[in-house]
Length: 523
Image (cartoon, rainbow, N blue to C red):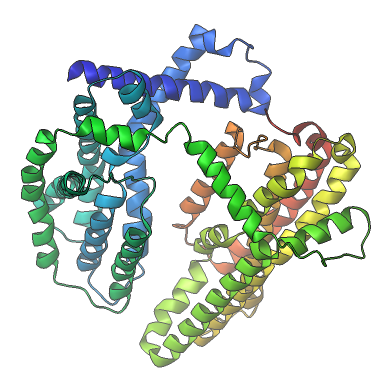
């Protein structure tokens, strides 16, 4: 067992170290300092190994922390009509049930598993049991500090908070045993990466039951949830025997991993088919414009499904939610004071909302796949004046697409503020509306600027820029961090507007100066 664990760690670490070295080579300011024979430099490999170890330690805790502050506690604090301990247990229990099946590492398709089981012919049973056991250890260690921290903060007893990670691990053991029994009966392997539609529908229904009842004030007593959680522990112990005695690990993993080598091709083909379906084939589409305006006008008209259809659908949802919130405040005036306080202080929270609804990444991906992928082979397309002109045209279009839901969200928040009691300073209404529009404008500029400065795609539409992924991750983390910031509308809104204007100016300068060198096809 120890040898199997050591080899599997070595494979995973080698794969991760090479990925880190490749990512370092993609960073614009660093790649010039790095030698061409990067993978043979001992000092850099030691540095990459250190980063790999740090990342492995972070995987114990980081994902669990984000899980609690967003899906469990972040949403849970919005429910004021039910006790905090009951809301916490309700959300955590149903998410645990979904995650037991939808996030079970025994049935994932990873490269290191393919190398070990298929190419190196390692003992499939030992490899699966060792790595699944290690994953359960990560669950226990990773969840423990956060179940204690957030559980005790909501009034749960310490002994129960200590047992919660064992209950979560028990649910995953029970789910794994159930899937293995199903494989023995039907011979059909469960693939965590390709969950069937009916399971997605069940998961969606469970998620509705996770978040809707607490919003209506309907939750069970805390002891009922605690009893279910505690039942997961003996269930997991009993099911561990089934996992240990299962004899078809070789056959199951061969079937599970048989498509790994073709997985990226299948993903690309699926993306291409989805893209082709979303493009209008109407030959009557015409434009009276000239030059780059003509090119952009045809692109927008032919990609109306990708751009405007999803934006208008999202706008309709935002409008319905805004009207529903206003109606609820009129029907339940006792909630007006609390909602008024939240709107006046929770504007930073909506930065994450605008990040989530922005269509910037979809727009830039469509640009590359169906336009720039071909035109980047022509020298004129990379001239500074041409790049800046087309950048401005495209920015105008994506701003228009994102402005519709942003305007509805801004107007809806202003209406909610007014109905919930208003504000002494009328300027708050203006700043609230304009700042939401500026948030939308910022993300439109941000995604398009990063696309032009880093152009992350190769000819196969794979993302090959480590720096691009770092910036996208940093953007997400900053928005996530600001969700917990509380600041008056005038202060945060004015800062947003000023930052957006400054960012727009800097973005245009950077694109004009550097995009002729960076806006190119990657190898």
